[in-house]
Length: 326
Image (tube, rainbow, N blue to C red):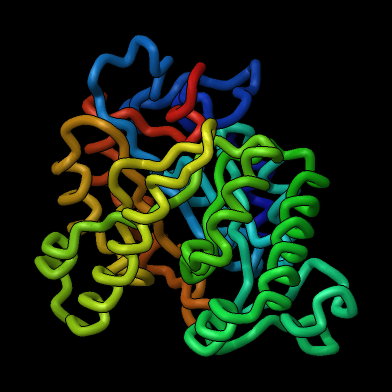
């Protein structure tokens, strides 16, 4: 774990101060010139837009963990979503504790992963080894009509929230692997239980299709399908958020998953005029990750032009905690 050790025990964390995302170390050095500007107290921040730069799949592997810490310490990453059943979950928790300015939320896994609840308590959701379904479409259809499966999904949601709580880390937000948290049988349960566990926000995808197509015209049919599906689900979910749980006005990254380029990120930042937005990516230090992360996203999050753009002070860099009352 050499690379992780270097990041965890090297230079002090240089994130902006006071965005409400996490406690700030008392001996924290001031940000260097060119680093993203302090987010400050939202009550005195005027109309500067808030940008949450989030990494998914934290805890999936050592490669992802190393990328999260590198993008946080040397780039613009302000937040990460933790897989509590990931292969490198324990390491991720240790690294998060050593980076108090990194806000951490729950990355709920209901497909392509392992369950947190014992297999015997959710026999219709997992196999005997505790593996969750591998086909999101088939599972989503089955979940819509199977009340027994819906009860088991609720059990698994609670188990993952309890495992996150056991880390002692503040729960900044909740979202889902493959955005499966938006399923109508998942969202209400997760939203209610997330509030009970102290979460401030939830990702509700609301991306800009025209912006994505401007930068990448591949997989147009897939992008159109995602736009329609998550457009409808997002509109439905926004009217059902419980009190205390907040959503960003805009979420970038849905149509560029695994291919977030610096040009795309800079274009998204340039469009921010007010309100709030999340930009999420899947950074890793090595290619070939089974869950899709890659070094391209890491390079983007550490891109000097993006660091400079967010260091101008025009945009507040923070977490979902900054959306709630202070």
